[in-house]
Length: 151
Image (cartoon, rainbow, N blue to C red; front, side, top):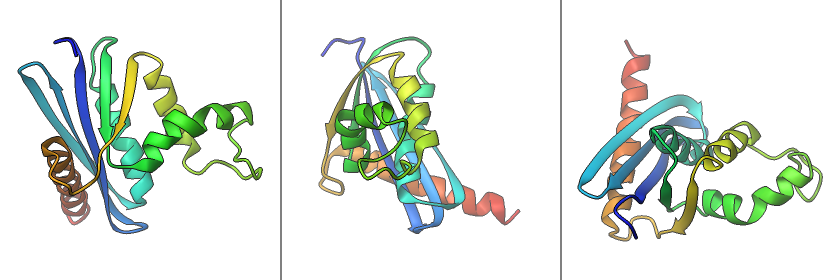
Protein backbone atom coordinates (compact mmCIF):
# COMPACT_ATOMS: atom_id res chain seq x y z
CA UNK A 1 0.00 0.00 0.00
CA UNK A 2 1.45 3.36 -0.98
CA UNK A 3 1.47 6.41 1.28
CA UNK A 4 -0.94 8.00 -1.21
CA UNK A 5 -3.55 5.29 -0.56
CA UNK A 6 -6.50 6.45 1.52
CA UNK A 7 -7.96 3.86 3.85
CA UNK A 8 -11.57 4.39 4.86
CA UNK A 9 -13.59 2.56 7.50
CA UNK A 10 -17.34 3.15 7.33
CA UNK A 11 -20.36 2.16 9.37
CA UNK A 12 -24.05 2.89 9.64
CA UNK A 13 -26.31 2.64 12.66
CA UNK A 14 -30.05 2.74 13.14
CA UNK A 15 -32.12 2.86 16.33
CA UNK A 16 -35.19 1.18 14.97
CA UNK A 17 -35.23 0.12 11.32
CA UNK A 18 -36.60 2.47 10.09
CA UNK A 19 -35.71 4.89 12.84
CA UNK A 20 -33.06 7.39 13.86
CA UNK A 21 -29.96 6.68 11.81
CA UNK A 22 -26.34 7.67 11.78
CA UNK A 23 -23.32 7.16 9.59
CA UNK A 24 -19.64 7.49 10.37
CA UNK A 25 -16.33 7.22 8.58
CA UNK A 26 -12.68 7.24 9.52
CA UNK A 27 -10.34 8.33 6.71
CA UNK A 28 -6.60 7.72 7.01
CA UNK A 29 -3.74 8.57 4.66
CA UNK A 30 -0.27 8.08 6.10
CA UNK A 31 -0.13 10.10 9.34
CA UNK A 32 -3.27 12.09 8.50
CA UNK A 33 -6.64 11.08 9.88
CA UNK A 34 -10.13 12.55 9.63
CA UNK A 35 -13.38 11.54 11.32
CA UNK A 36 -16.78 12.45 9.87
CA UNK A 37 -20.33 11.59 10.87
CA UNK A 38 -23.95 12.63 10.52
CA UNK A 39 -27.45 11.31 10.88
CA UNK A 40 -31.05 11.43 9.76
CA UNK A 41 -34.49 10.70 11.19
CA UNK A 42 -36.73 7.96 9.81
CA UNK A 43 -34.13 6.05 7.82
CA UNK A 44 -32.78 2.51 7.52
CA UNK A 45 -29.53 0.86 8.44
CA UNK A 46 -28.76 0.06 4.78
CA UNK A 47 -29.20 3.71 3.79
CA UNK A 48 -26.82 4.76 6.56
CA UNK A 49 -24.23 2.14 5.50
CA UNK A 50 -24.34 3.55 1.94
CA UNK A 51 -24.30 7.17 3.09
CA UNK A 52 -21.18 6.54 5.19
CA UNK A 53 -19.23 5.50 2.09
CA UNK A 54 -20.72 8.32 0.00
CA UNK A 55 -19.76 11.00 2.54
CA UNK A 56 -16.26 9.54 2.93
CA UNK A 57 -15.64 9.56 -0.83
CA UNK A 58 -17.08 13.08 -1.10
CA UNK A 59 -14.47 14.20 1.47
CA UNK A 60 -11.61 13.29 -0.90
CA UNK A 61 -10.35 16.35 -2.77
CA UNK A 62 -8.74 14.54 -5.73
CA UNK A 63 -8.74 11.07 -7.33
CA UNK A 64 -7.12 8.52 -5.03
CA UNK A 65 -6.36 4.87 -4.53
CA UNK A 66 -8.89 3.96 -1.85
CA UNK A 67 -9.43 0.92 0.32
CA UNK A 68 -12.93 0.92 1.81
CA UNK A 69 -13.37 -1.29 4.88
CA UNK A 70 -17.03 -1.99 5.63
CA UNK A 71 -18.82 -4.40 7.93
CA UNK A 72 -21.83 -4.25 5.59
CA UNK A 73 -22.07 -7.18 3.20
CA UNK A 74 -24.89 -5.21 1.57
CA UNK A 75 -22.41 -2.47 0.56
CA UNK A 76 -19.49 -4.77 -0.20
CA UNK A 77 -21.47 -7.26 -2.31
CA UNK A 78 -23.55 -4.50 -3.88
CA UNK A 79 -20.45 -2.80 -5.22
CA UNK A 80 -18.45 -5.94 -6.07
CA UNK A 81 -21.15 -8.30 -7.31
CA UNK A 82 -24.63 -6.82 -7.85
CA UNK A 83 -24.08 -3.32 -9.26
CA UNK A 84 -23.10 -4.34 -12.78
CA UNK A 85 -26.32 -6.32 -13.26
CA UNK A 86 -28.51 -3.65 -11.64
CA UNK A 87 -27.16 -1.13 -14.14
CA UNK A 88 -27.58 -3.56 -17.04
CA UNK A 89 -31.21 -4.14 -16.00
CA UNK A 90 -31.91 -0.40 -15.60
CA UNK A 91 -31.83 -0.51 -11.77
CA UNK A 92 -34.01 -3.61 -11.45
CA UNK A 93 -33.28 -6.77 -9.48
CA UNK A 94 -33.16 -10.23 -11.04
CA UNK A 95 -36.87 -10.61 -10.23
CA UNK A 96 -37.66 -7.29 -11.98
CA UNK A 97 -38.30 -5.26 -8.81
CA UNK A 98 -36.79 -1.78 -8.42
CA UNK A 99 -33.44 -1.82 -6.60
CA UNK A 100 -33.90 -0.53 -3.04
CA UNK A 101 -31.92 2.64 -2.32
CA UNK A 102 -31.18 3.10 -6.03
CA UNK A 103 -30.66 6.85 -5.45
CA UNK A 104 -27.75 6.16 -3.10
CA UNK A 105 -26.34 3.30 -5.19
CA UNK A 106 -26.26 5.62 -8.22
CA UNK A 107 -24.56 8.37 -6.21
CA UNK A 108 -22.02 5.90 -4.84
CA UNK A 109 -21.37 4.46 -8.30
CA UNK A 110 -20.62 7.95 -9.64
CA UNK A 111 -18.23 8.73 -6.77
CA UNK A 112 -16.43 5.40 -7.09
CA UNK A 113 -15.82 6.23 -10.75
CA UNK A 114 -13.52 9.08 -9.67
CA UNK A 115 -11.17 6.81 -7.71
CA UNK A 116 -9.55 3.37 -7.77
CA UNK A 117 -11.49 1.62 -5.03
CA UNK A 118 -10.84 -1.73 -3.37
CA UNK A 119 -13.61 -3.13 -1.16
CA UNK A 120 -12.79 -5.03 2.02
CA UNK A 121 -15.39 -6.61 4.26
CA UNK A 122 -14.54 -6.68 7.98
CA UNK A 123 -16.49 -8.42 10.72
CA UNK A 124 -18.34 -5.84 12.79
CA UNK A 125 -17.71 -5.60 16.53
CA UNK A 126 -14.72 -7.92 16.23
CA UNK A 127 -12.00 -5.59 17.45
CA UNK A 128 -10.87 -3.98 14.18
CA UNK A 129 -9.82 -0.50 15.43
CA UNK A 130 -10.95 1.30 12.27
CA UNK A 131 -14.34 -0.44 12.32
CA UNK A 132 -14.78 0.29 16.03
CA UNK A 133 -14.05 3.98 15.34
CA UNK A 134 -16.56 4.05 12.46
CA UNK A 135 -19.18 2.42 14.70
CA UNK A 136 -18.57 5.04 17.40
CA UNK A 137 -18.91 7.81 14.81
CA UNK A 138 -22.13 6.33 13.38
CA UNK A 139 -23.63 6.30 16.86
CA UNK A 140 -22.56 9.94 17.33
CA UNK A 141 -24.44 10.63 14.09
CA UNK A 142 -27.61 9.12 15.58
CA UNK A 143 -27.26 11.30 18.68
CA UNK A 144 -26.57 14.40 16.56
CA UNK A 145 -29.71 13.80 14.47
CA UNK A 146 -31.81 13.32 17.62
CA UNK A 147 -30.47 16.47 19.27
CA UNK A 148 -30.94 18.60 16.12
CA UNK A 149 -34.54 17.39 15.87
CA UNK A 150 -35.29 18.32 19.48
CA UNK A 151 -34.05 21.90 19.10
